[in-house]
Image 1 (tube, rainbow, N blue to C red):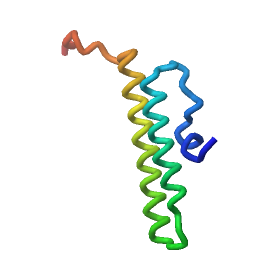
Image 2: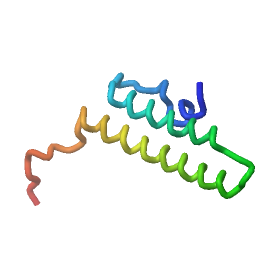
Image 3: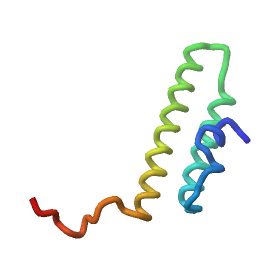
Image 4: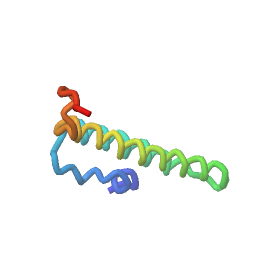
Amino acid sequence: MSIGDYRVGTDCNPSQNAEIDQVKGVTATLISNLEESRTVDPEINRLISLAQTKYEEAVMFAVKALAYRMKPLFDVTQPKEI
């Protein structure tokens, strides 16, 4: 298991949604590729860490969107009465 797989949880997809697997797989690859680009320069490593964190955040929101699309939280077809 790569660092990217670990961070995005590629082995966790209870809905077995193929789109979620795809998004997590691509993100895991990006994170792992960045990890291999680390150097002795602390500024480069800081930027890599920031980019990896942003990828982790992005995949969480993408998975949430894909999961909610399968089972919407709100019925947006019916206007609410106030």
